Image (cartoon, rainbow, N blue to C red; front, side, top):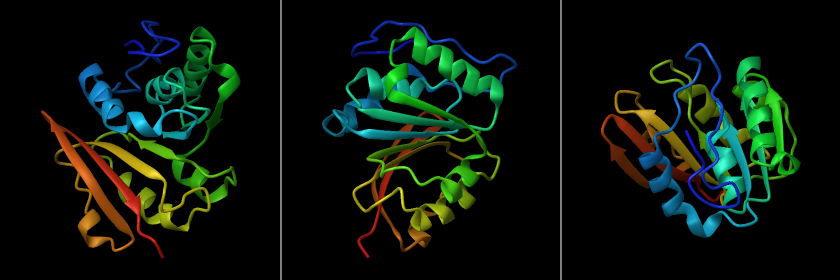
Length: 184
């Protein structure tokens, strides 16, 4: 797995051992960043279920100002720290070893511009996260949320009046969903 473009272009990232992660395929990552290119410079990113830090580090490499990485596995967060050092982007990244839902309930960081949500497939982790997002002061109607999920992992945004679906793209069995909170 490598960084596609920006200041760390071509750098290969380390992966946590033991099959703890499922890295975004380059084609999916590239298409996602092409779609959000205008939002990346100077943006604040949140990478939930961060794994190796692949998505947040790509955002920093492309000019993001800050990225918070959250993963419950210490092996993953140690790997993220190594990858931030490897790419020389550690000064703009902050790593949290904790449950993503608890992070959303407890943290009071400045608002985020873009949020990546890439949970393990088919584990039922999306529903509690989607219920917590509207309650979290770190987000606004301007925050762009991006979920990577497996086709069979039901999202149900159409049943949640607090969300506005922007776009959805399918790459084989992978679905990328873009949405925002509705104005209150």
